[in-house]
Image 1 (cartoon, rainbow, N blue to C red):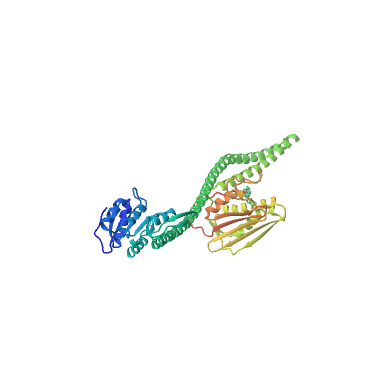
Image 2: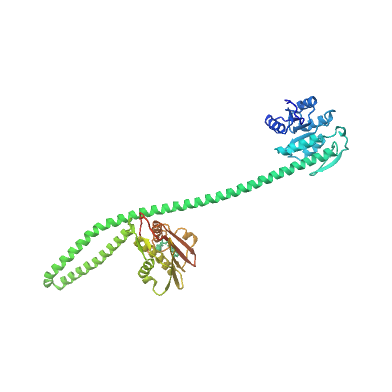
Length: 468
Ligand SMILES: Nc1ncnc2c1ncn2[C@@H]1O[C@H](COP(=O)(O)OP(=O)(O)O)[C@@H](O)[C@H]1O
Ligand SMILES: [Mg+2]
């Protein structure tokens, strides 16, 4: 309820029950060069209007005791105040607002939250051309359809009718524009959200992959330790048995030379049998020793030294080893790019080739018809790609997802251990490369190894495994 010194443009009476809203309005109106009178309710506003006769009234609609419409009506009914233009601030949530405003004699609507420029423009227009007080109450009532209801309205005059409707329309257009701007902002925010969602999904997928690799390498490490332990446990008694076998064989040879002439035919046969058995045992022991060496190679954490090898030669060697399984029924096609040597741990690298080719042969064995394996090598400046493709039985998506898991196999007992690919995966990764599988059930499989051509520093922990 304060009246500031009248400014050059005249005084504006602000009627607003919220002190915060009132203060904000005051700043806007004063900023435009008007003097401001403030009232917190309709009754005070009427008193101030009588005392100061402001150039215009800007009033909130919903206020306790006397609302904006009632204030409007009172102003227009009172001689001397009837010509003061009233700008009503409303949320325009209800179409009835327009009817109420018309009947109350309001001149202009501005929607809340108001746009400062629009409010000031409306205020200026009202002050520059205020309604004529003489016309008050001069128009006949008219019927107006709004929505699905018909209302009776009594506009003060045609100017008020048009003015109020136009200001309502202007406010609606303004609100619409704001809504559109907000919609655009929302769309942009949505696009950003989608982008961050995609980033998040990618990060999650990477995390899961890293996790499964970690699990795999942990499994492989413990398997390596287990196998190394078993190999070690077998190795000591084996060395002891081999030594004694040699001693017994030598002793038998010496004893035989002296004893044989004195032996009965039955005893001589027994001696022959003992010699035969000793020879058989030598073969068996030799196989155990081979197996122990393989187990140790399989579990070896330090897999020898990095050497530069010729990949084509390595493939030749592995194919020779597998020749007994390939024979004439599988056609092997080679597509070789220019080769300049590959840095790798040769043993483990050969194991990878062996595992991939053995699996391809298995897949062709399981499929009917003529089999074909295509081995393609390709080399660019940094990487070597080796692709082993077969037209065998292929695999389902569910199988493909699990093939790098240790002990995952679809083969029968004694046919598969499920270790070939998990070991190969580990070897390839320790070379800083990748191993990927592409497959279609019933059509075939393509296994792709990509390795860096050069190894700068020796990489730790390479498990190697036998063909599985
Ligand atoms: N070339 C291939 N074609 C079809 N399935 C394959 C191929 N290579 C691997 N697989 C599938 O992956 C599984 C795991 O392979 P691997 O780790 O070498 O173990 P294993 O050969 O002992 O079963 C196989 O049992 C098989 O189901
Ligand atoms: Mg295998």
